[in-house]
Image 1 (spheres, helix red, strand yellow):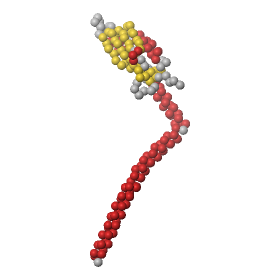
Image 2 (cartoon, rainbow, N blue to C red):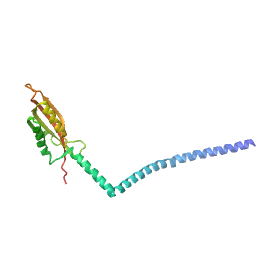
Image 3 (cartoon, rainbow, N blue to C red):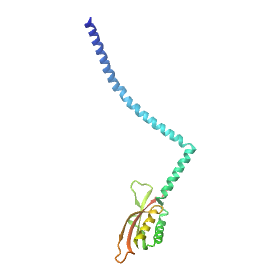
Amino acid sequence: MKSIYKKHLTTVALVWAGCFVLFLFAYMLVLGPQKKNKKEINKEVSKKKQMYNFALKATQAETKLKLNEQIERLQSSLREFVINSEDSANLVFDISQIANDKEVRSPIIGVKDNLRNSEIPNCKHIFENRIGISFTTGFNQFATLLNALERHRPVVFVDNFSITRSDKDDSGHQVNMDLAVFVRKRQDS
């Protein structure tokens, strides 16, 4: 009788093992890819929910006010660094006025033609304008002029400068400076 039970038991075990392998194969073939699709669909649903919640918040008046205030702050911050193309002509006059206030001698200020309206890579709305200055001054006046230019609004970037030492005395060193400013492009309608 024991051999009959053994035979039955091995037959049942082999059937169970065969079914297990068959079910495992079916799971991997059919249900495995479905799990991956389910995860992707859940991610997509969560993105859509976020977009819906954002759109819902954007329709509220309080959110609109906050967004408008934020836009206004960003635009005023932009005005500190970028000058309008219409006002770029006045910038040379402003720099000349600063140079006269800092008592530099014989300033020569001009826009560099070969670098005028230089395109900035990956930038659609602004370009770079370069201005060259040559003058004679002492070191203290140069330092105060440099400080005043860097504090100017919109920002004037001092790209490079060179100082040629005077042979005579310390009062008149020749200075050449290259300045750069960001200019907003005109928006053609």
